[in-house]
Structures are given as C-alpha cells and as structure tokens.
Length: 411
Ligand code: AMP
Image (cartoon, rainbow, N blue to C red; front, side, top):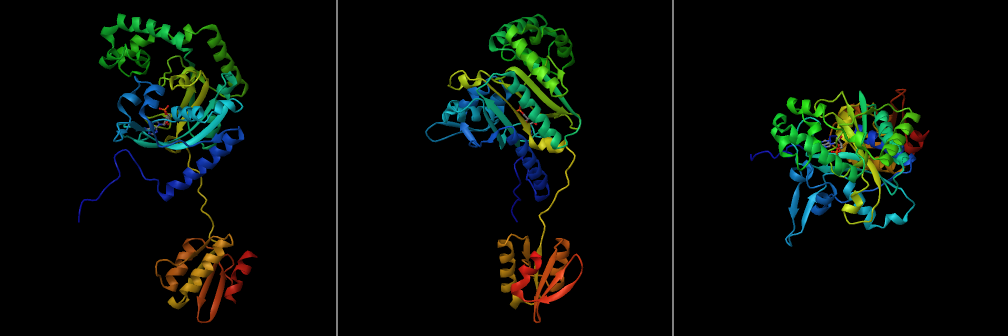
C-alpha cells in the first residue's frame, strides 16, 4: 500500500453531519440580508495579485505573508482571494454599478485563503459571509450594516457576544495621527517589543494589538485617534452611535480597535465571542471610503463586514437538524423485483416524495431495518404475492396494486 494522502494542513472537510448546520445558517442569513435589500454576488476564487496589494494594503500581514500567489506562463500574477471586499469593489467598477441606485447592496458567502498558522478557528481555507454597501457615506449605512451582522449572529444563537466600535477618521486625520503616534513610539522605543519597534514606520497602529507587557504599558498612555477626529468625522461617528442606541444594540467604544486590513476609514467594528478561545473574532468590518480609488476607480464610499462561518458555528448553540423526510422506502423480497422497485422509487421522487430503494444488496430483513432507521413513513415491499404497503406510523399493512402505491401515500 502506498502512503495515504491527507487533506492539506489548515483545511477541513465539511462532512454531512456538519453540512446541515451550515445550510441552516446560510438560509437564515440569506433571509435576514435579503430582507434588507442585499443581493447575492459571487466573484472568482482568484484575482490579479495587484487587487489585494493595492486594495488590502502592502503593509498588512495578509499581503505580506499570507497570500497564496501563483504566476501564469506569461508572468501575470494571481492570488487566491484572502478577503472579499476588494473583489466586490472590483466587480462594482467592472460592471458599472455606479449607474444603479446607490448604495448598491451586495452579500456573499464564499471561501477564502490565507497562509496562517492553523489552530482551532483559524484555517487556511475558510468561509466568510459578508456584505458590502457601496456608494453612500450616510452614517445610517454603517449603523444598519452593523445591526444586520448582529441579527445574523443572534439568529445563529451565537453565544457571549461583544461588540466593539470605533472610528478611524479620514486618511488625512489618520496620517497626522500616525505621525504623532510614530513620534510617541520612538520616544518610548526601548520599552517596546522588537516586532512593534520594527513596524513603527510601516504600521504603528498595530502597536495597540500587541500582547507584550512593556508595549501594552506604553500604549496605555499613547495618544488616541478618537481624540483627534475632525469635526465631520466626529459627527459621523456620533450619528452612527445614536442610530445604534435607537435600535437598542449594545456596544463598547474601543479607541484602540484596529483591524488587520489597511483600507478602513471612519467606522470600524468587531464582534467577538467569549465562548471562543484565542481566536475570538467572530466578524467585523467598517467603512472603506478610499478603497475604490486605490484600485483605479472614482472616489466612492463603501461600508461592509465579513464574518467567519466556522467561527460562528463554533460559538453558536447547535440548532436541531431536520433531515428531509423519507416518505417511501421501496423494499424487494427477491432480486427479480429490483427493477420494478427501482422504478417505483424514481417515480415517487419525481412526484415530489422523499423515496429510497436498496442500493447495497441487503436481504429483505436488512432492507426493512434500513427503512426503520431512515424513519420512512411508508414501506412498499415487492414480492411473489404482489406489493404490500406498510404504514410505519400505525403499523397497518395491506396488499395494493404496485401502480397505486403513490395514490396511497399521497393520502
Ligand atoms: P477579516 O477579513 O480578517 O476581518 O476577518 C473577518 C472574520 O473572518 C474574522 O472575524 C473571522 O471570523 C474570520 N476569519 C478570518 N481569518 C480566518 C481564518 N484564517 N480561519 C477562519 N476564520 C477566519
């Protein structure tokens, strides 16, 4: 025997016992999002590498070390999508969606790829559900989209949820603040972790994320972006908060909230679940008013979020699975009745019933056991004496014409 081939590290199979919970989650999320006017979009599994380099940001972990990138013979470089926002914005531009009534509201449920260190809740291929509302900078878009993720998570019965919220202001405020923060970090350089020190130039905001005690102490006294917002950004943020208050959604303002992707402006938010371990992020997002310009379009505001389906399911109370009913199980006493049994089951399915026939060569006794295990409502037994139809609920059995089985079960 040769070596058994296994799934790549950090990937997983969705087995039938998991598939039902996922399908139930998808159906509930779809209803919630489509009720709010979001329409489904699916983009390709891979895109031009430049889309992510420019859209997500060269300095991010995702672009620097987590992308699965490959080249075509002509040298063109492609990348398996690590996130969904840049692809959806590319599609918005490519299909002239600016001509539609704005904001254009889209949702997706797709798989994404990141070369991360695998652990519970962190995979190299994972699924995200996400929404994007493109073409309006109204704070009501921000508040509504946050409410929608709350609703999706609530419907999935996600446990111990917390919502953190902040604003990053506009790129100009961020640039000024970034200079201020860099100066502050340099003044305290000797107390920072080497990784944070190395990233002062590239990404000083990430210092707030550090779990290094010395760095954390320095960051407690660090200047905060929220205190530096320009008036219109502060007003925007105030309105988002008022609307969330009006809708009764609890949140915590966290001025140190930074997100892993560079494109965010103004509102950012994240839902975490204390029911998860180290990987507690369930979903998050924010406003990305500069992204479309960065990928070659006109200045266009946008707001969205993404949430990991595996994380949601890990943090949620399992919903009872409902298997589709087996209305009819067709059993046969001898092999010569197999063709007729096969046809009867096929006819029943075509008529809209759940119907099964023996596929594993079992004896009649074995077939009846299978019917019982499948919870069949009726069992038809084809044999020398004709066809017997057994009502499994009442236990009543009677002889019927094979051609009338469907008529009987329909009653
Ligand atoms: P992000 O696109 O990084 O903002 O991630 C949004 C959400 O996707 C996170 O809150 C997680 O729920 C999920 N997620 C991100 N990366 C992974 C991963 N490697 N494995 C599983 N879920 C992930």
